[in-house]
Image (tube, rainbow, N blue to C red; front, side, top):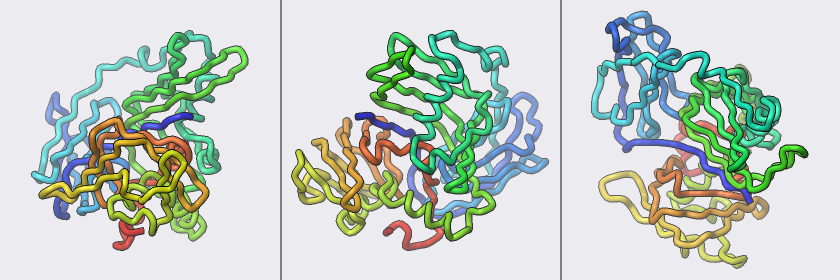
Amino acid sequence: MSKVLVGLLFPVICFSQTLKGKVIDAANNKPLETVAVYFDNTTIGTTTDVQGNFSIDYSDAIQSPLVVSYLGYKKVVIEDYRTTNDIVIKLKPTDISLDEVFIDFDDGLTRKQKLRLFRKEFLGTSKYAKSCKILNENDIVLRYDKRNKTLYANAEVPVLIKNNALQYQISFDMIDFEAKYRYADLETQDFALERVAYAGTSYYKNLDKADKKRVQRIRENVYKGSVQHFMRALYHKKLREKGYEIYYKGFRVAEYKYFKITAKPNTDFKKVSLKQKVSILYDRKEQSDIEVYVDSFLVDAYGNYSAIKGVYFNGAMGSQRMGDTLPLDYGLDVKKETQK
């Protein structure tokens, strides 16, 4: 059964405030205009003005790092922005050449074949994923390692994804992508996935029809039963109330017999440990498994969790990909959302 690993990052929770700053070229100290400034994996972002200035609001619900991204410059990720204000961010030019970006690998698969595999493992196969379109596929570099049966992808510019079903345009600045197959036949194009892992920063933009009731219903359906929904319920110890049942070796068990949840002193995080692999049943029909390969991980009230590389899902939750994702601030304009 395949496993999925998706990278997220977050710093420590603090009080609400407005962050102001300026973005300049590190070489000549000149201001940079239209630089993207956003909180990772949210809909909250802005761009710099002609003087390189920006102002962005955030609340306790936003715990993602601040991302500063501009074409031709190295991306900057800031996690300690809550301790300062009126910051000056110096961007350094990238040293990548176009020849390196557009190199074509001769690895046994055509680019068309690699793109088909990439779309499947990156966007997913759900009806929501099938509504997605990558707007700049030519910017994606793909390589297949025949010996290790692994597909790799990278891009020097953000991958732009239009999700028509969920009415988001996602800008995904890819750090890495790896899909490893336990079986691969290049002639028949038969691939059996073992695991997929991808990481990067992302910014969600609502599209024109995002406020339609139909779209809101679809988003809510995607949210319920998602990893984000599960983690929020786990934090609040409301697994049963939110429709989750926990099973061990085929038998239903008490929700917190295997999950040990303790408050982390002086923070709003809780520490979670799980010593055995357990199954999760949502709404009596969607089954997933969770395995934890670290002693513990941290989770907050909004569904953010740490130790991404030590927490694996398969089954229904493990099949979720970019085409099934919502931003971390989904619904947080409604105070009761963290309890949903």
